[in-house]
Image 1 (cartoon, rainbow, N blue to C red):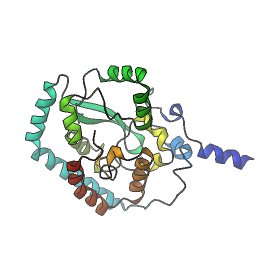
Image 2: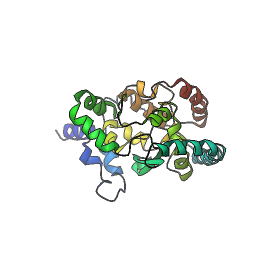
Image 3: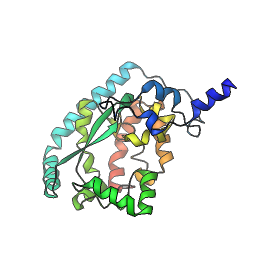
Image 4: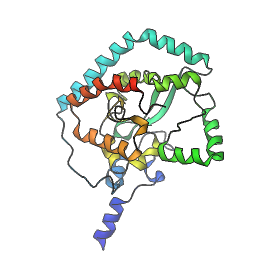
Length: 258
């Protein structure tokens, strides 16, 4: 009987209240031990296999590459940054938008983007979700809206070309993100990751990644989680290079970008 109860407790998905501790405690992050022990989703964990142990030197080389590449890209793309900043400012509101995301070891950080939404985006979203059942269902399923009324004209261009994500090079330089990694998730998505959240939290989120070159928003949510989980378990420097080389064509195709 005790074994059955323990198994049920281990495989039960966590509620939002059970995993989010940062929101009311100064944003210090998540209860890592609680997540590791209890955030197990039976469906995602069917194909359990041990994660590949990485040599510390390999991890260090990844970080050094991130620093060198992000600093070089920031310098090289500075004229483009200035142009996009002017365009974003003409729409009204601040140039950059820092959205709270969950990073390595469950620590929250501000993920920077060029602002693509109207200044009162939260109010617009709340009004839409309260009056449009179809939009509410889409939001609850994907945390995105294909026809999002909050997005400005300039913002839509920035999103479809992925140029809105260029400021995340600052996150990479600061150590919050990597050039390649899982897509950065918001706090409300933690409970949907189940067991895979432990894998997600083992590495820094990336500007690009396997999900981004695999159709992005055209990919189902469960498939996104699987891709993030498999990346974290099987990461290699060579696989990162493959993702980086495939990213430009994925951006040009604009598959799943909205």
